[in-house]
Image: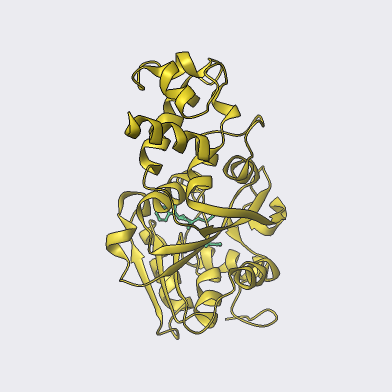
Length: 278
Ligand code: SAM
């Protein structure tokens, strides 16, 4: 294998020839845009702040470029890949790594909290664009073993996940992220570092888990109903899901004439608490 700079990250020519040798054509439907810039791979791994004790879960191993670099820095890596035709490439690229387990599975259909061994985990991934958002939001809600996420997503997805109340892109994903994590955008990534090149830019975000309030699941149901009719005032958009809507909103110190996008994640929690107190 040709090594570029330090570590096992793969460059464009190398990835092209590995794919060609295996008769593999990147599958757009599976979001197969492989990272071909070793510097970006190393930047992602550096951002993850791994040490020799860190357990890492990766979604979408691809040709194993990020996987190998993660394995070098971490204690253990479990990497999911849906496309079984990449298995021979992964087996060869990762042959000398005894701390990596490749699982050929659809990561959108598994319960990571059950599948990952006990202990705390960091998710580090260049996520497939089609299922990546759902996987992160589900893991935030249902896989508390993952306490840190360092993930690359499309730039607009990053914007939506990290949006503040009152902005145009603030919505349900922002509320789910806000209830479970402190999030920052680490850096943006241009299309030319991928093979094949996507049409849009990407961004790496870091989400550090915080303790979510016990009312978070109900707050998410409320936010889902409210954003389902985001142009309507809350007294209307929540009328079917919150009993005595106006009174409950007022007791949560929420203005019934406000709209979904005006409410912080904490205010959706306040409505859920007001329901409990009734
Ligand atoms: N990690 C590699 C890299 O950075 O070059 C590949 C990243 S590529 C953006 C996303 C990868 O996720 C692809 O290899 C694709 O086959 C895989 N993938 C797509 N959907 C998946 C799913 N539901 N479960 C697991 N892997 C999936």
